[in-house]
Length: 105
Image 1 (cartoon, one colour):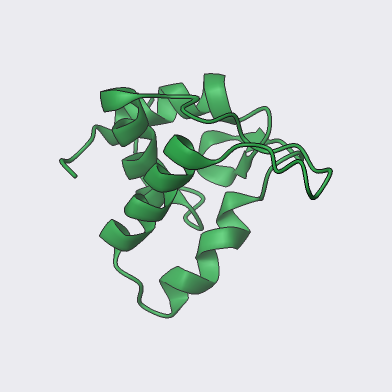
Image 2 (cartoon, helix red, strand yellow):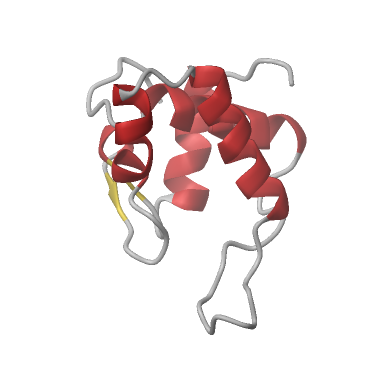
């Protein structure tokens, strides 16, 4: 996967993802989806590579969908596509569990 632009990703995250997900750096407090600071904080503390987290986030953006077997709403598949999805994945990987990660947007 090619790199993304975390600043562009932050802007997209705020408008597209933040109503469902909490991410301190973005100032979002959504409670429908996972809190991404919590979700990736322990991974970062264990030394997971940012690229690994980026790949997980990108995969979730591309393939997540509601699971009718659980009764829980899921993230719409391909909510973002192409470069937009890459930008958000890079931003989340860089800034999750880092309340002031230094990315403007």
